[in-house]
Amino acid sequence: MREQLQKKIDLKTKPTGSLGQLEDIAMQVGLIQKTLSPSINKPTIIVFAADHGIADEGVSPYPKEVTWQMVMNFVAGGAGINVFCRKNGINLKVVDSGVDYVFPSGIPVVNAKISNGSRNMRKEPAMTIAECEAAIQKGRELIQLEHAAGCNTIGFGEMGIGNTSPAALIMHRVMKLPIEDCVGAGAGMIGPALQHKLNILKEVSEKYNPTSPLETLATFGGLEIAMMVGAYLEASKLGMMILVDGFITTSALLIACEMNADVRNHCIFCHYSNEQGHAKMLNFFKADPILKLRLRLGEGTGAALALPIIESAIVFLNEMASFEDAGVSNKE
Image (cartoon, rainbow, N blue to C red; front, top):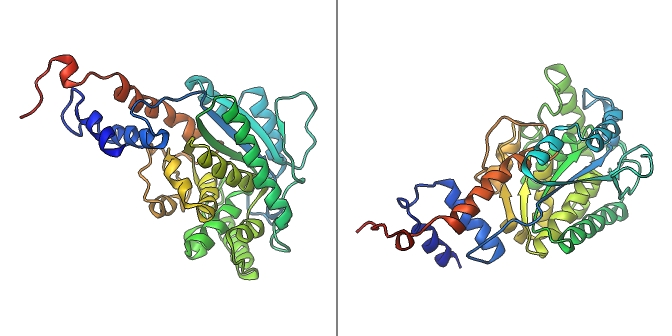
């Protein structure tokens, strides 16, 4: 399949390699879908939302109430992910994975709540193994529903005050890097506030010694991160193309790939986040992200912005004339 795709790409009416990274993307999409004529059907971004007990330790400049308030902003259509999904024809689903709030009935929020947020891991593990497994399973089930509805391209976003802290701890443990290399500003922690965050996460890291990917996720993760892990695993199993967003979603991918290395083969890395640590994650995955826009909003916004470029790669592969079709002389 790789050889056939490369031949199809090279015989288009252009100098070899002249479409640069678009050619790499076309190759990758063809390999994911196992076809010379790939397509994007019902592209969807799922935003998983949850609260985090570690937020009680002052690791974010925002109060945790912002999590549920932003979910209501998603519902109202006013967030960054809403406007980019509308612009680019992407379906958007919002999932309550574990928000510490009771949402009104009848609003378009998928109720997948495992509990009202993770625990404060400075005092105890963020989740029990049972809670973590339940979140993973729910993530799998949500992807099964999307796939059954005809979706073959899925991206993930997240909302959860304090969630760069669990992401940094997961990165620290999976990639075996010093915690200092993994902790960034998040939603705006700078100077003494950033040092406080680092001190808290150092303490948390030294408190535990998980020995498996599942235990690492349960100890340091969050409910929305665990649900994303399940979503990655199921999307890969079903042969879907996965659009990888930024720092938090890539931390979930680290765990998913520890559980099943094949997940990586279904992923297109959409952007280079401005959050400290994401560049190291991308290097770990040997990824060549599509965009570098200094984004660090989360929500899946980088994935939504990258989709038109992926679509352009598919369009040139499927619709651009070959030298033979166009009657144009190829190089000697």
